[in-house]
View 1 (cartoon, rainbow, N blue to C red):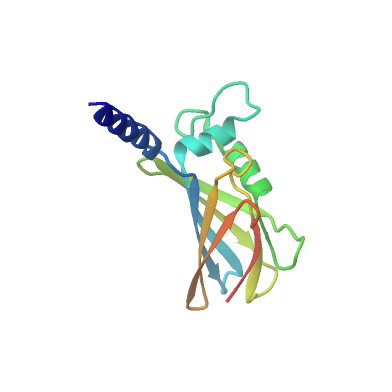
View 2: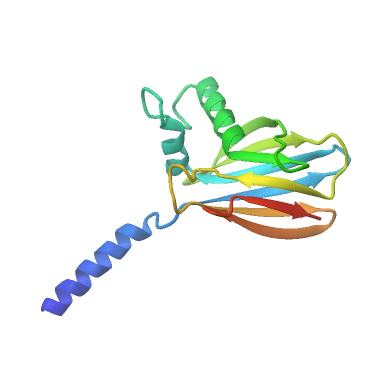
Length: 164
């Protein structure tokens, strides 16, 4: 009976942990040479992202219920400070926020980055949600010039050069 109680408790703890056992985002990055821009789709867990947006705010932020202009301003500011694109190290190209789309327990964020000239690679510093969740992992899938590649950004490995 004692083993059964321990097993039941372990199962209960693992089920609670499995409800949201990891913190991750998935970025789909497409290089569009004719438009000379990066087109970005970023999937984030709603609860994690709302927690990060709410830091320093007088009340909690809801992507679906807070005023849209406030949400857009907070999302844009968070993206600009935590996802930095450049054609050379240390450069920070401006991000143009496009919009948000809801999915079951996540949201897709859409934005673009204009480039001054055609490129064969980009520097990316990806810190999204790392200050809120130390175990945050940010996965980036790149599609450019007919090639596909993936990269993982996490604490201690936030900056990488992606080439195509």
